Length: 101
Image (cartoon, rainbow, N blue to C red; front, top):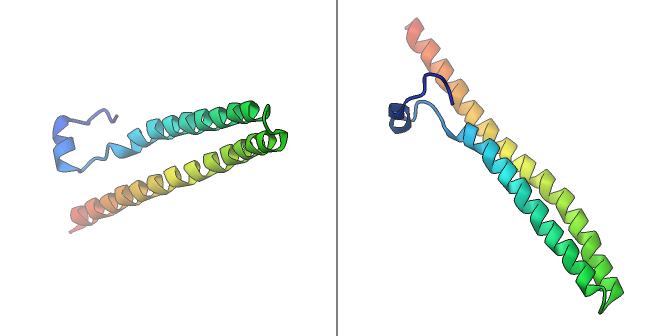
């Protein structure tokens, strides 16, 4: 958090908390994606005893989905980061216009 962040800032919405929280959400999402794909991969190993092709397909798809999931999650978090960055820039512009007027 900023050094000059106070409880009153939470009520006024002048300073945003979400950009800091987004970093935590990003890492939690990556952990969730990794765990989901790992569970799918291990499930593919279990399915291999009944059908080799199905188990192999599940394992390959879990690796592909991991790569796709990480990429998609990164894009989503970056979109939100850009939205909050735009909001902060607009606030800076508003403040500079108020000082000049």
